[in-house]
Length: 345
Image (cartoon, rainbow, N blue to C red):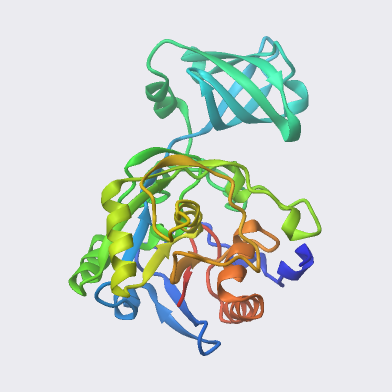
C-alpha cells in the first residue's frame, strides 16, 4: 500500500492544544471489527466494554524532560536539543536546532552554566552526538533545566508548562526513559482503573520507552519499506504470566496504545506465548501483519501518513479505520496527544 492511502482531510483546529480538565473526560469512538460499525461513547464507559478474564495491558514508561534550551559559546545563539538516546554516561544522541550551526566541536551552555556540552559528531536528519559536562547527577540536572517534550503540533506561545510535567504523563508512569507519552494511557483516572478491576479484568504493566522512531515521519511511498527505529522494552514475569493465562482461558488481551502492541507482538514466541525479559524492537506493523497477541486496542487519533495510523489500520482494517477517522472529524472529536480516543474490538 502507498503512504497516500493513509491520508485523510483534517482541520487543524481539532488538534487538542491542552489536556481536558479531567483526565477521563474524553470521548471514545467504539469501533467493531466484526460488524464493521462504530458508535460514539465516552472514556468513562470503557469498563462496560471489558469482560471478566480480559487483561488490560498498560505501558508504564515515564517521560523525562528531554527538551533542552541553551546557548552556543561564545556567540550566544539559541540552541534547542531533543535528547533521543543515551549512548554512554553523559553522551547522548539528540535532535538539534539549528543543526547547521552545531558542527563537531561546537560548545553549548545550559541553565546559566548548570551544564556545558560539546558536539562530538554529526548524523543524518539533524542528529548530533552531545557530550555533557555536569556538576551533579545527570538525571537531576535534566529535571532541573529540561522541558516536557510536547509534540510539535501542540503550538503554544509559552511552550510546555509545569502542569504538562504531570498531565503529559500517565498516572501509572513508573519507568523513566520515554521522550513521548504513551498517549492512550493519559485518559486513565484512578476511578476508571478501579471500575475496570471491579469487573474482574486483570491489569498488567509492561514498559516500552517511546523514542523518536514512534513518531518519525514515513519517508517512503511503499509503506512496507518503512522501518520504525528500535525502541527498548521490558516485560516482567508477572505480566507475561497474566497475559498467557488469560489467553489460555479465552480472555481477551486489550492493549492500551500502539507502543504496548509493538512490545507484546515483539515478545511473542514461536509457541504463541509472551516471553518475559528485556529487549529492543524494530517491529513495523503494516496491513497484512498477522496479530498474534492482542484482541482489542485503545488508541488516540493519529497523524495522517504516520506509522501509528498504519498500525491502527493494520489492526482495524484499512477501510474501517479511515471511515472511523472520517466520522471522528465530522463529529469534532479532539485529535492527537491530548485528544479523544477510540476502542477497537
